[in-house]
Image 1 (cartoon, rainbow, N blue to C red):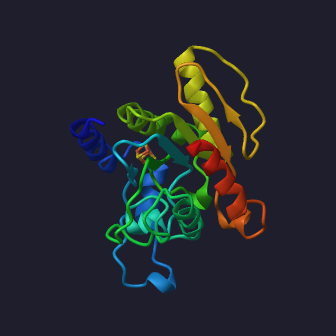
Image 2: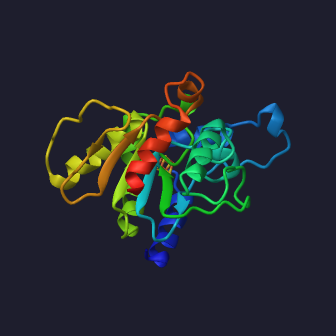
Length: 222
Ligand code: SF4
């Protein structure tokens, strides 16, 4: 990875104000009762991880009370609690908790980021916001030279990656039906894997279990 370029890119991301709606929302978020008195990040949330990552994990967007509070993606919310618990089991993280920027979490072999860097209302970015922000995660991917697999968490990230693959190949191939555990070999790109998003709507209902996500991560590792 070219650290200089990533540092430049990260600076560009945290200073970004391209989406008026998301800028207004991220800055308007007020702390939940349990986080009262905490200083919220309220800026675009950067990706992070291993400089020699072979796996690139793409999520949706930071949550208002999670990444938008802590400043680190999948950190400080229920989705992150589930995700890092499983990543730790799979040997991809030194600890199962992801609570704050300085919590000692270290990622081994992967880099994690989001398709949209600012917290959206109801966790729903618009197609235009997704398109505008895609310049950032695609540049992150480009800078990580050892990546051989991309894991998209949820249909939104999967759609974003598929659109990128089509654009890169100058084609308009219809996206396949989004299916947990599916994988695709795309010319000139890392192997693409799909998983349900680890949001409480999925994990609390059993739609996504730890075992299901672990199976996908194990396949990627092998
Ligand atoms: S979502 Fe992305 S493009 Fe839009 S303001 Fe945030 S960082 Fe910028």
